[in-house]
Amino acid sequence: MTLKRLKIYLAVIGPGLITSMIDNDAAGVTTFSVAGARYGYGLLWTIIPITVSLVVVQEMVARLGVVTGKGLADLIRENYGVKAACLMMVGLFIANLGTTVADFAGFAASMEVLGLTKYVMVPTGAFAIWLIVTRGTYSSVEKILLLACLMYVGYVISAVLAQPEWGSVFKATLFPPKETLRKITNPLDAQYVMLSIAIIGTTITPWMQFYLQSSIVEKGVKTENFAMSKLEIFVGSIVTDLISFFMVVTCGAVLFPKGIVINEASEAALALKPLAGHYASAIYALSLGSASLLGAIIVPIATAYYICEALGWETGINKRYSQAPQFVWIYSITIFLAAFFVILPHAPLVFLMVLSSFVNGLLLPFVLVYAVTLINKKTLMGEYINPRGYNIITWITIVLIILLTIAMLIAMVV
Image (cartoon, rainbow, N blue to C red):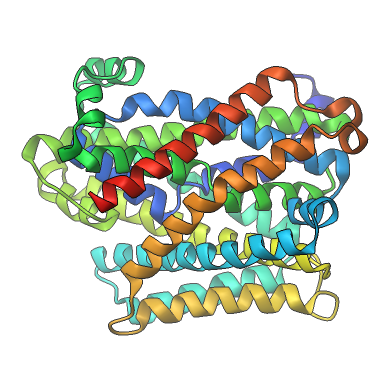
């Protein structure tokens, strides 16, 4: 890579990497930790196909933003009407509020593992990230997020400290275990089906598509530099799923052989302590806390982006309160309401998290359908419409998500 190309890459880097990495927020860490603890390496085979889908979907929405110069909610409103945009807006607000609650709950749990009370740490964390976004610029917020993404290395270190049998790990990653089909078809193992769905749902989420496209637009990436953005999206998608891979490996190597069943990522951090050592436990907890706070920054930003775009209001981190008051208010309400729920005694946190996952699962096919139909409009995209292969992968992903969501609903009823 020449010095000129390196400068261009450094100028456009940010949206793709941040969106992908912070996809592993508290909900993601919990999903992959539970998967490893309950089924060992039995779900590692899902990582590669999901990564392919993630790369295609992220590249697609980024291209939409670069070519049109508009956010996804803007394009939905302009091409499908205000009603469609507002219905999407209501659903996404509910889903994202639940996701932000989950992120603050993950931060609270990680702090308690480290011996710190949530009643101090959650309000402090909420105020700190509110200050960073409302008083900062897009560039300063992006630099902080990129730097904080380095904390994800902790999951790699934890996996190494867990001392797994790497031969078995790579075999399970490349070839689905023989018992996979039995687990999928056996009604007694609905948990396996639901975890498979959760892995897809936590890797490709509705908020990601809105945040990535809007941040690409706010950063001002041009079509002539889009090749560098594509490279960033490719690298970010692979790295974030590698982090997910190491989460599964850590819990699959340490907790699964001992039959330790967990329901939250913080339980994984606690369980690792006597089995893999204090350092593995502390690193896992610190990484969970960092991931949770990063999610609590990004998801409310995505919420403010798409609500303002859907209603035609001014939006953007670079804009001050006097320029975009609705953006600041929506971001602030999401942050502090979620933090309030987490420290409120007897708050229905589990209900909010389940509702969030359910609404995300219902919305994702609609979001992807909007994105794939928009990007195939020649009047909108010109020569940048989707290649045939991208359309095939995207529609397969959409159909698979719909089928798995139906399977999840059946599994919940049965």
